[in-house]
Image 1 (cartoon, helix red, strand yellow):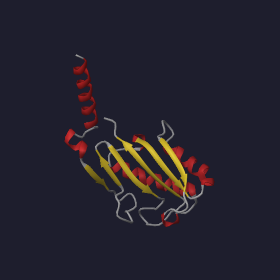
Image 2 (cartoon, rainbow, N blue to C red):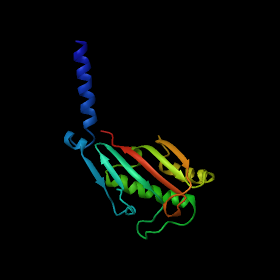
Image 3 (cartoon, rainbow, N blue to C red):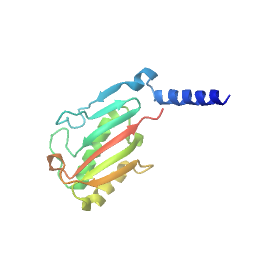
Image 4 (spheres, rainbow, N blue to C red):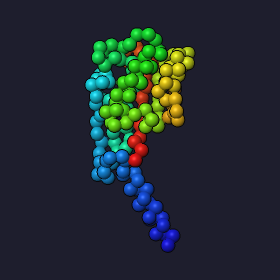
Length: 156
């Protein structure tokens, strides 16, 4: 009886991990590239996002306006806002939103700018915010002040 319960539990866990929202079990192991014109086009050999099963891995984004192709002006707060808008567009392209985000990594060129980034960030993740780490780095592409990457999971 004990073995049956363990096997049944494993089957339930496996079935739960294979389903997410509208997808079926066969889609749970398919890697799908996510692209949207509402976020900056990749400037190298990477994808804006990769959806694997119920998990979306978003590449690092910076404060590039996807319509002009230029970095927004106005400092860390403005860059953070545009960066999170870009990430939001990628999330929506994968049928997700900010509440699906489980982990965020923030790269700052100057950790003294942390309060400015945090103030804007809180507008996007005010309720039940995801896990997060913030790091100071010496350089960010296009001389940006902030870059943010994230992982999101669709709850089924």
